[in-house]
Every structure is written in structure tokens, then in C-alpha cells.
Image (cartoon, rainbow, N blue to C red; front, side, top):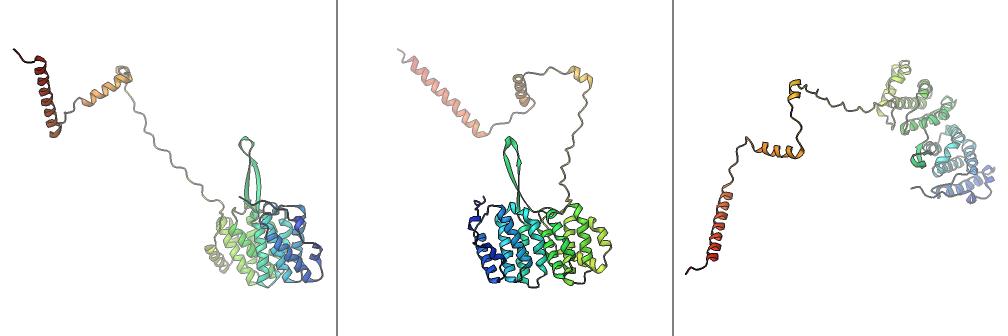
Length: 338
């Protein structure tokens, strides 16, 4: 069961305009207050104002000159995505591209904070209500799919900044590995071609991550859909992709074999009964008569088993006892004779 949703709008820090202050400490101060509010609320009730806030935070991640403020803003987006859950998916297009652009930072602490926010957005739970029997509503929950996130990731793969390409590739690899649904067939070609191009990138980090993504993609969709791309690669690149394929793990695979139904049991052909036998067939006896006949049939033509000796002795003793008792009764009835 989910916790009750809480409206945090009335609890937002005062003077949110400080987010755009020229003093980084003031920006950091309001971001810390906001982060405390968000992370202390398990379920956040969605409101239009929070959509605007998410966009402000994404702009802060993208453009703030102070990396401390960037990390704080990314932490707030991560908390909002986890707290709002389903409705936050509608803000994905507004927050993912700006965060991907800021992956140009070289400091791992900064890119890790942004990566955590990106992962939280990708794993945002979406709800869909469907009507079932008797008019009841059933709520289905599912993660943001690869079909949703791929259009956001493709543009940064051709960015001029090598760190942006590497960071976007790392995010794509995580999405491919953790996605509960496979990539749509229509997106396989543009993604695989972009990855094949990056295998020849001048930046080693981009080349390595492209091989990881292509190997993970192959694990998901199989080798056949990627044959055309793989044939155009140099042997050394093919070896890298094959190595990544062997190490990759995915939760969803496309075109998995359907379970085979058990073969139907072979039926014996009905035996033909001669016409003469049909004419000579006797009428069907009643159940009672049939039962009697079965009892007789079970005793006929079967030798009677000799009872055990102990039963024979017991029977003889019982007969003698009855005979003696009968004589006693007779003598009692006749009485003494004079």
C-alpha cells in the first residue's frame, strides 16, 4: 500500500525567487530547504506548480555556475520523481534533456548526482486505469519505457562534447539493462546506427560505452536485427561488442520463444464390431441385474480359497458351544420325569 499523498505547495520555502539569485549561497540555501521538504515526504501530491518547479530545477542543473548548486538541484529532481511517481512522467521531456547536457562536467560527484536523477525519472511509475468486470476500475502500474526515453537520449549522442556523449551512453546502457520492456523494433535501427558511429569516436570513453550499449542491445533483441550493423564493423570493434554482449544482463528480451503447448494425446481408433455381433447382442441389463451378474461372475470359475486353520477351529468351537447350549435348554424344558 502506498502512503497518503501530501500537498507540499503550502510548505515550499519562502521566497523561491532565491533560486535565481546572483549569490550561490542563497541559491544553495533554498535548494537545501527544498530538498529537506521533498525527501521527508514519502508521497507527494502532484500539482501544476510542481511542474514549474521541476523545470526551474532542471534549468539550475543545466546552467548554474556552481557545481554544489547543480548537485543540490539534481537531488531535488530525484526526490520529486520518486515522491510524485506517476504524474511526474509528463515532465520528462522538460527535465531529461537539460540534465543530459550538464553531463559535460568532469567531476564524478556531479555526474553521479545527475545520473541518479536521470535514473529516478526513467523509473518513474506511471499508472493507467482500465475498466474491468462490473464496471470496476483496475489501476495498472508500469515503468517509463525505452520508447519514451530514447528520443531524449539520441540527440546527446551526437553532441560535440565528449563527456556529454559518454554520460548519455552510460544512461542508455542503464536503461537497456533495467527496462522491464524491450525496445520497440522501429527504434532498433536508429539506436544501433548511432552506436556503430560512436564505436569509431575519437574519445575512448565514448567508444567503450558505445560497445557496452550495443552489446546490451544485442542481448535484448538478439543478433539478427543487428546483423547489418555488425557486418560493417572492423573485427576489433566486433570483438568489443561481443565481449560486452557476454557480460550484459537485461530484464527484457524481444521475440522470446513462446511456450510450447503439450502435444495432444494419441487416440486409439475405434474397433469395428461385426454386423453379426451387433444383431446377436443381448439387451442391456438393468443396473441391479448387472450388479448381481457381476457378483456371480466373480465367484464362478474361481476355486474357493481354503480358510485359515484358526478360522476353522473357531468355527468348530462355536458349533459345539451352540449344540451344548441347545441341549441344556431342552433338558430344562422337559424337567424331571416321574
